[in-house]
Amino acid sequence: MIKILSVVGARPNFMKIDPVLRALERDARGFALTLVHTGQHYDENMSRVFFHDLGLRPPDIDLGVGSGSHAEQTAAIMIGIEQVLIAHRPDLVLVVGDVNSTLATAITAAKLHVPVGHIEAGLRSFDRRMPEEINRIVTDALSAHLFTPSRDANENLRHEGIAAERIHLVGNVMIDTLRRCQELAARSPILDQLALQRSKYVVLTLHRPSNVDDPEVLAEILEALAEIQKLIPIVFPIHPRTTKQVHELGYQSRLADMPSLRLIPPCGYLDFVALQMNAKLILTDSGGIQEEATALGVPCLTLRESTERPITVTEGTNRIVGHNKGKILRAVREILEGQVFEGRIPELWDGYAAERIVAVLRDAYAA
Image (cartoon, rainbow, N blue to C red; front, side, top):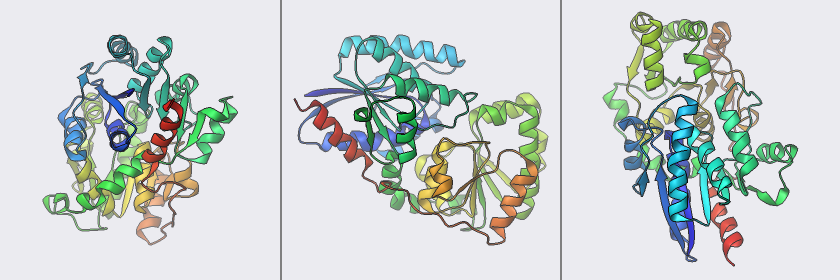
């Protein structure tokens, strides 16, 4: 049996690892799987509900590290995962995405000489002020197998000197999960519960430090939202980090003064996919939502100055608008007036990325 230890820690990781675990379990060659949850995201709405919605196997090990600064969280994960690696001695460690759990696991495994496979490798925003960018670069440099979602990711890795034989274009595992769950999401009662009509509302997500930690930036985004909600209702599943910042900055009254801005707790996966599927447009600073919007064919405006997923702009339905109020409002009005940009599904975003990952692992470890 090939012993694989898979590590997840935050909400986006769950959707990415689920199809890979399913594909590994289906493979007749035999893989012994251990799933570790670092506990980076531990809130019910940010963690456990995703295991339920996805039917994801319960973690075999939960490190329960909780919150903290980047250094505190990364250090706690490294300490915990080192003990797990020494005890289990896997043949391979699989990490996904670009969160602190990804970085901490990759560093620890590399120092213990355990090969690392990075799923969603090669993505770059070229903005090192983003903590996720540092996590991506370091994780890719340390990984033995780099599974990329798009050809631009391959190019980024080659420019960084990564050997071609370590790079594998497999497609987007998030889209595997989206396609598997889309029919289930279509049966979600969330629209009825929120009294929403299809294509007559906007979905908003906002959690990046660059947006919610800077008082001036957050204020400008809120000013734009105040105007948008006069045109069309906005549904805002508010991230715990954003809630905390709104209270600390004293911006509660700004939100209260927007009658058509609906604040709701973070959604489960199926409910949130249902909200995206039926939205007129999506406003977000999330990388994964840019991809899901492209796959669903829903217009997306990204409230950032750059994206590590440029294929969602060059081929998909995404546009970068930053946090400038005027630019955001112009883009929203264009979409509401029918100037919708038609996108297409990128190469290999077909629901079978996980099977391609397993094929690579089978070939690499069959001997």
